[in-house]
Image (cartoon, rainbow, N blue to C red; front, side):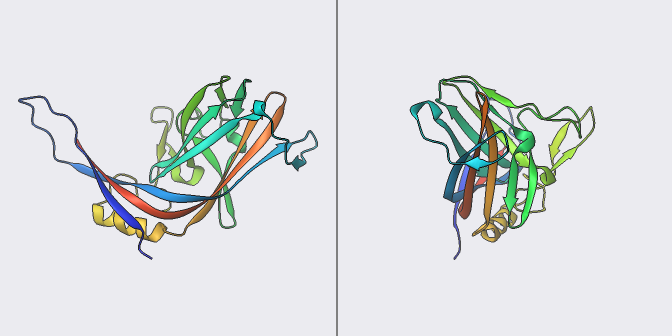
Length: 207
C-alpha cells in the first residue's frame, strides 16, 4: 500500500528589498504506530521486572520520527530527578541493535562516554538522537555530524522531492524498537517503544 504523502512548504520570511535564495531541501517526517510500550525495573543483580505503578513514577517519553533522526519529548512528572542514560540506549531493527548518540548534547570525542540527560522534577525536555551508524565524528573542530538519512543510506536534507517520496514509500512497514534506560532515584527503569512506519510527510524548506 502506498503511504500517505503530504507536501509541507516552509518559506523563510524576507525583509523588503532583500532577495531570497531559491535553494531548497526536502526532508521526511514519518507517520507511525506505537505497537508496544514496555517499562521494566532493573534490580541490582540486573534482573528486569514489571514495576508497580504509582503516581510518583510518571515519566513519559513521546517521539517524533524524521529523516534527520528521532526527537524524544520527555516529561518528568515523578516529582524526583531523572536522567536518561544514553550510553546504554539502543536502536533495534530486525536482529541488529546499535548504540544511540545524543545529538543535542553529543560527547566531545569519538570514544568518550555520553553525559546523561538530566530532567528536574516536573520538568520536560526535547532530545534529538541518532543511531550511531548514521553519525560521523569530524574531529575536535567539526564535532558530530549526521552521515545518512534515517532508514536510508543517502544524506539527509540533500535529496530531491522525488528521492524523498521514494524513500518514504520504501520505509512503509519498517519496524524498530528504541530502548532508553532512565535513572529514577536509586533505581533504573528501561523504557522500550516498538514502532511501525505507516506513512510520511515531505517537508520542503527554502533559504
